Length: 196
Image (tube, rainbow, N blue to C red; front, top):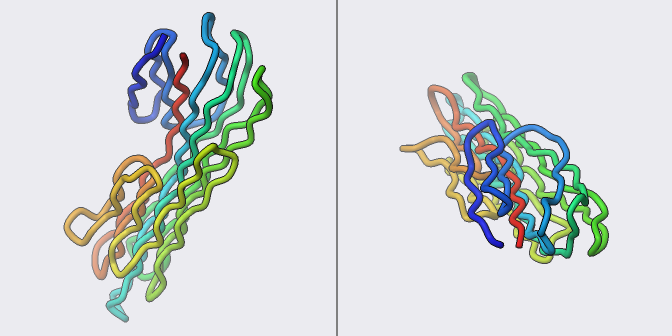
């Protein structure tokens, strides 16, 4: 049985027994009846861009990392998850907010799970944010560092904010730096459990 996971901001969405996507918060995921394997995709939150009206050199926020793992499960196994938020932009000269890492942990029939998709760092005046790193996946993809003024791309492939479209794209991209106005926000993370 396979399903398609659908993301809805600020919620979790189930797709029958196929899977669930979490876009905020923390809690426990329980393996449904009939599932024998799960693929877990974890994205951290992106960093926000900085603001630099004085020096005219605002750094973009770093993109968050992604990790993906497939492991055997049986019905009733549980995993703990926590979805990281994106960093908030700033309205005055200074650093944008750091993103928050996303995690999944637990022990299932196939073994232990300890996944962390690291957050992107906030950019600042003359300082771009650093991209996040990931651990615990079968594949671990780092986020890109921010530049001047563009936000870093996420390990998910989501694009960082630009001067024309300041906020990072979901999931996990960094926000753009700004000379005036509010700097771009980092995109939230998400966690997907897809069963077969």
